[in-house]
Amino acid sequence: MRSGGGTGSSISSALVNEMTNDVALQAEDRPSVPTENAETAVVSPHREALLAAVGGYEAHERSFHQRTHSPERRAMGELDSGVTLWGRGEDVVRLAGGDDAMVVEWGDRFLKKWAAYQFAGRRVMNWMITGPARFPVEQNRKRGETEHKRLEEMLAHVDGAAAWARRRLRSVERAAVSADAKASGVEHKERTFNGGRIVLNKPLDRVQLVFDGKPDPDVIATLKSRAFRWSPREGAWQRQLTQNGVWAAEFVAKACGGPA
Image (tube, rainbow, N blue to C red; front, side, top):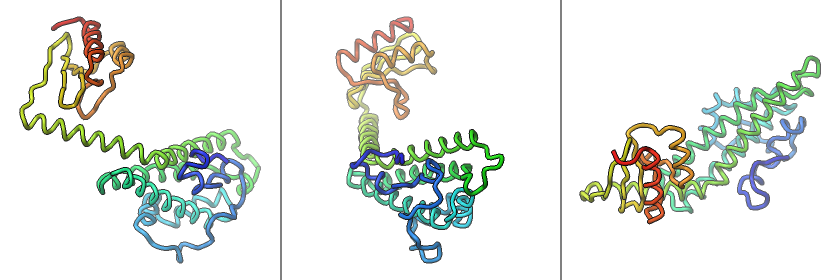
């Protein structure tokens, strides 16, 4: 069974053990799934949000009728796994230094990915349930692949919670530095070239290329080859402010036609 997470160390692989057996192996049952029913399940904000995202419990359970002989057990198992993964991911974000806003942001992303996985699964059938006559084998195979892809995306988000939090923290810190620099009136050293300008942004420790419009594909390829990365927050292509970085910026400016 493919879990989508790393072996042993993945925080999600053990939690979703055999989650995709019905799709990958066309199995009828999963003995590891909890046997509680929807009426006795513990109500939690996470569980309520998951159910709301897929149209409520009845719709969620009904989506398994063409995939397993035990739709209630499978539906509850998916909910239990979703609640557990969501909670553990939030814990990881907090441990990485994330604040409440980051925890909520990470959770919103998880919810969307979990729902996308569930909706993809609704299109998959099990011939042992529907019967083999006129069964759309190739179509079902493609739908199963899509479901598994959505599962892998969800698990990657969970497994990468700590790295995601660290990236967000760096982004927030840079935004704060940039805001402080603007408020204090710090001047950035810059010069123009044909179609844009080079900015030596010392507060952010970045050399930036700001274009008047979207660069041509050839220019974008040159930027990437010179280690520049697009920053939506800054509205610029940038890399660390070093002498090599300045030389790289000059190279790109010259490729765009030189000084304005």
